[in-house]
Image 1 (cartoon, helix red, strand yellow):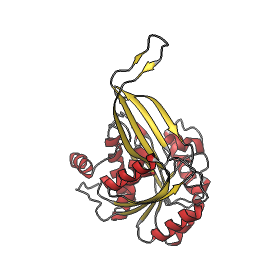
Image 2 (image 1 turned 135 degrees about the horizontal axis):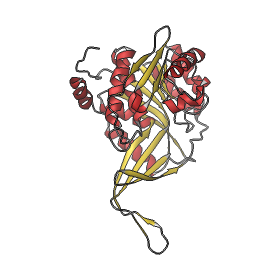
Image 3 (image 1 turned 135 degrees about the vertical axis):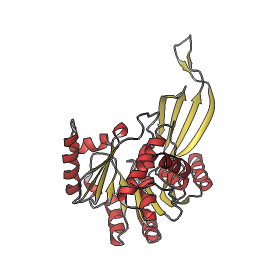
Image 4 (image 1 turned 90 degrees about the horizontal axis):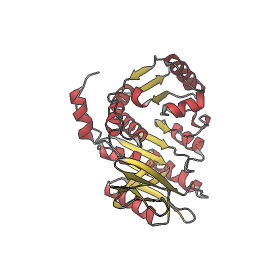
Length: 315
């Protein structure tokens, strides 16, 4: 594949899904209390990041694309922080505030670059405002070139079949990062991007390469997908398309410091690439490079366009 400098300045991507506030509490030297054998963690730094679907929008912004995000937040301080973070990144946010829900928040406590514990607040967004959410999506779809549905199983996409139907009516590509054990609800999508673990929960354990290939082709057909991309960590990514042979993208790096949010980076780069006019094969090639960069970082991080082009020039 010909290497060249890329840019996503003209990409327009609509992101819909579960917004999460990711918090990182950093401790330098944790130790045990001599009285009760309780771990003591002196916190020296706190970092807050857009997580979940918000991290997809952040990834698109960091590579120079234009994105709008639709979803839920709570009427709380965490929701305000999330909105400010996205405003700072110049992400167009069309959010619905839920009075009876807290903003879903994940706090990760790290010491010496290792995660010690994760504390989660609010299990799901439970809303009676689904019609408002759907109307916001309908009103926005025609202004964008690609739709990303980022499913973290937190309730925002409870009626995802309807959203897929809205998008199919105007023939906009639908990219879905799936979750859970019911993939039938994603039927008819343009692209599904499960990781290997999520894929195996649906098709069964794959012990050999040919099992992945056979089951991938079968799932593609069963769900009436245009394409299926199975991300496989250190083993790269495998792309399945209708009436085409599977394409494998080998991992560029075997080093993985943290895979948190890597799936967000993959679908963000693919979405921005397709919205710019690149082919799906090119989009996956760029996404594979982006994933190799982001897994070397700690926490919910992103890739910049400069980092992406720097690696491309070295290929």
